[in-house]
Length: 350
Image (cartoon, rainbow, N blue to C red; front, side, top):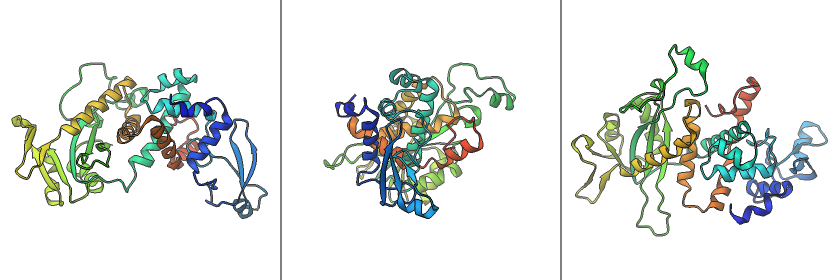
């Protein structure tokens, strides 16, 4: 644990103040109307500072319109204290699973799983789905296949009228989500190592797909890769559309034993960068001892976020994760909870 956080981990009031600094660095703002006519009130039992917005109170004809730093965020319905949440986020960023977080923080596994899914969902919404995030320059594209069935969902298995999958050697080759091996499309932007001012980090974008077909991957590549970029792939036919889409498409022929090539213009054509990403992703997913398809996109989004921010130190990564968690609205999560009172809090972004 980094020492800068130690003063906030023993007192709920200090932890609440730290949440406020990260959410409102320029002063408290009403999360409902974004107004600044704020009146400070008493603290709640868990140490959260209460505020009242005069504009919202006047609009609703009430005397007060109360809110805290957790209002309109993924933490709003949480019963954990602010100090426990700080511990959870610190464990989350070092890639621990829910069982390990529960043991480290001292909470039950159900609460830890709920916290992990909320944090994974927040970076899925605020980082993965960010429409302004695009890759450019030299971009490698490839796909991998992750074994993920319906773990912990016996009714889903029964509905498909098939026996549960036994633990056997992983099959090779291409598959679909229906077959229990959903594909993951990976895009990685090679870092510009000639620019010493820029961090040499390979920006990645990972998308869990039901299958790998041209009509499935085409809108993703067109939306996430700038059209004047170099797109480096293998010779899988699903990428052929990029030749007419404005990309400088270059391929390596793995079937003939070609894995890297130096073109006359100096371009090094290979997909080794994205292959390294797959190695890291599989190592990360192995921590969960099997992942359900329902949660796979959340786990992949967590790995994507941590990989793209690995140039930060632990404290900067912690602050970035906390700020991204406040950018997520969790509106769909609240809608699902209202509709299905006992639904697992992991369907919030599906």
